[in-house]
Length: 139
Image (cartoon, rainbow, N blue to C red; front, side, top):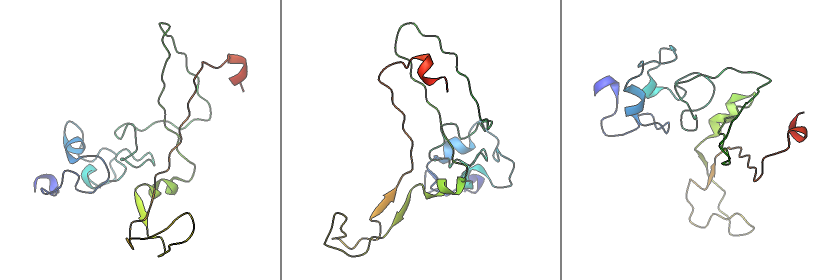
């Protein structure tokens, strides 16, 4: 059990980030909270669970205003960014399962009497099929 990890699991704390990435070429306690990365659900203490954090070892600054200057070669640019809610406890809903009451009526049904019927994955996806006119997005 090197670094206190579970040798039978690739992800000791099941946070969605394999142990290898949490102990290789990084500080073993990246955010300094006295919880080793392999057991920490938020390695950089930015309030975003490692399983969905696009950069689990890079805490971003919180700002109310951002400006992006993007130059392209004529190809459609793709920008990936992450939005964190003010109430970060909502992010703890990630990868949780709930038991739906035994039911064979209505749209949602539990016919197999399993305990993991509802799986909630909170996400925000913004897609544009054209480059917006600057005047339309200035506000």
